[in-house]
Length: 454
Image 1 (cartoon, rainbow, N blue to C red):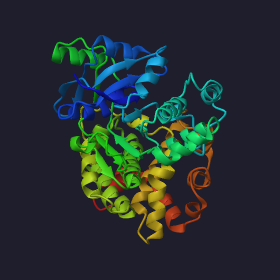
Image 2: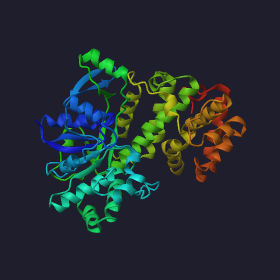
Image 3: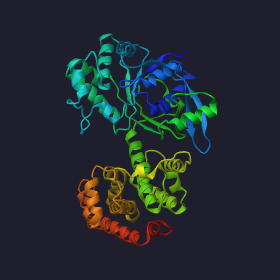
Image 4: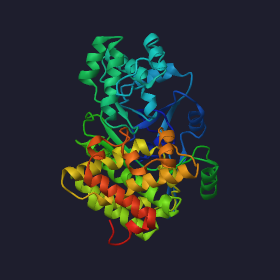
């Protein structure tokens, strides 16, 4: 029987496919680190975990699909069990309190600070003994441990937010300061909030997943999960000595989580967006389909290795990381739709591609190849607009108006919400985009992505 050394808020599919898999393997060598699953909003998953005594199936989706039974969870808390959760968080054996509650679950304002007007925060400041938010729970539990003379646990945010540990630490301290300034000072001085990055494609569990597991294992699992074979867990190397040895099961401990975040954003996400717009214009539906196109996959690899990576600090082996990403993109078992990746381009392009363009220009490197996916986005907007098809984007109305009858390239480049003035007025960049749009108007994407082009 394992002990309980980790409490996790938000035991959804990603947590159970990712962090719980690392912990399940750790338990084989160190049984202290079982996970207590806590659900703040709904009890369905927790109740199913209880019924199945913490056991469920992880399906690894690759060229060959494999199955593992995980059993890292050994305590379960749902709605109405706040007193038990509070007692669990005061257990000296609990050293990590992790979370996957989505970005909105941290009750942050647009600048990353605590949103004091958020209804959950307003409630928790008025009723601190009965918190509803993760922030309120962490402040209450850390206050309990300070009052009992216990060392603090380490909050470990596992949601995809840049500088997630720093943001969480600031939010908890700000919340505590409004109730007990001395507690806030203790939190700032004693509690470590590591930054982390997590990565693994985890499709939603549906009836098809359950049927696949049932047929392969004979287990009528109510809560199976699936993910690609690749998984990464990058953790800032500031965990206290009494913490679980997650590095022994593959987590990467580093002083520079930001370098991994930036590499993921520009290499993985930048290539994803490039594949989406070019692939959709050619007629592909999924990432794997697009990667099966020799010309397109070759162009994407060249874009990553020759245009994106040179703009990144070589904090780790970026070329090997790029190889891993290209292999992941080719995975036939993950049906990642290009149309979904194409959503919200106005929000994604600045960070995924335009920052790489700015770095290239600042370093005196050519930007013709980087201009191709940006031109493809423009042609995607034009195509959707002229067909009266949906554009899923916060700027959809404005984009559609330009796509239907505007001067496509100048008008889109003039959108300051997307293109900074430094790019919109850069002659080399603007010329590269205009030439790419003109060429693809005449001959489609293949006129630019074939051997010897761009």
